[in-house]
Length: 482
Image 1 (cartoon, rainbow, N blue to C red):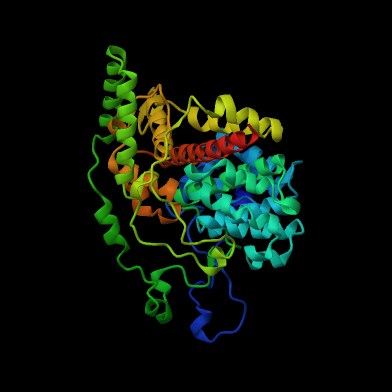
Image 2 (image 1 turned 30 degrees about the vertical axis):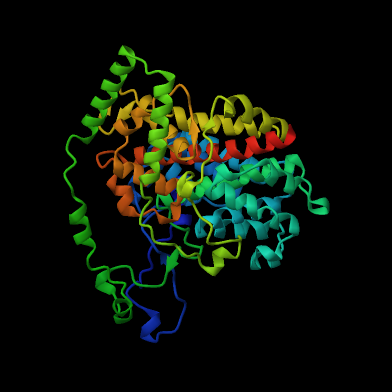
């Protein structure tokens, strides 16, 4: 057994041989043996496709082994990111630096902030991982009873966490001032930058976790079950509790919609748009109009079902104001000025501010953004030698458009040509309300594409979201400083 397969066997225990015995209703005594709740690291992606990556790619094997050495575990997020080892390497390096290397914040504060951020999106998977890490680095168990048991300094971060996660365009320099001038509980600028990067990192990682259907590890809450694994071994108590899922094949049949030519149509549109670019260039006024039109249309895209997801007490105790969630930035007569990228951009402003106050992190974040944005294998489904840059830019800029950020040199008319409605619904849900992402939504967009390509889309969405949040936070900090 090679190293990676050995590591995978640690993450995914084989099913017990006595799997037909349900100790819940048989009256047998003895140890109840857990088994993974799902097959593989993702509910959306077949396990064999994920594990196949580690068998053929030596670089991925090496990255997995390094991750296991550093963390003592190989988590399911890393396994799914393993489709794109270049990105995974950059991601793990950045996360390791944020959580474990020298920095303004003590280690237990870092993990607690990760818990606060993940809890805002009800991401119990990430919350559970960081609860364990928090305790391992000496965190106070009392803090885990709820945010009101944590130090006042961390409680004050609740408002920033809430606004950044759901409506970052509302962040002002006054919010920053309240944190930096809180007398004995005040934050330093360096500490605040560290906290902001952690908050945005875990908000966006929650998006990736839900967007890829990441399963909890077997040792975590929700990652295992004691029920038998197949219908042939179901007990009366399981069927009575509604665990039979007898209509699963009906759902599969309904999802087998004809999608012939989807990729070819998209490639043809890219070709036509490129020709239009070469033939004529829209005026600045027309470009601005197209942005406002796309921004308005993005508000009409409904992110999943509009039902409310009520967080459990286990999750909601880690943050304040559970009813506060995503709201479109121009609804209900509320006008927020467009954030013009040329006035405050990551490249020209945000990068240098982060690097000055938290050395090396700006560089790491920049490499990670660039990796996700520029990553390409020049393929689309079964087609090779395809330039996908136009499509990648449309996805990135659509997310920033939803956050009110505009690039003067981009024609927002391209977005409607390249991103269909089912894709937009998936994007908006995964970025703005990730806890509402469903397998049906994941399967409904780009149905001819490979899972590795959909994971790449999720990397783009995650990084674009993180950068958008960072831009609003760093602009507010800059305004306070000036």
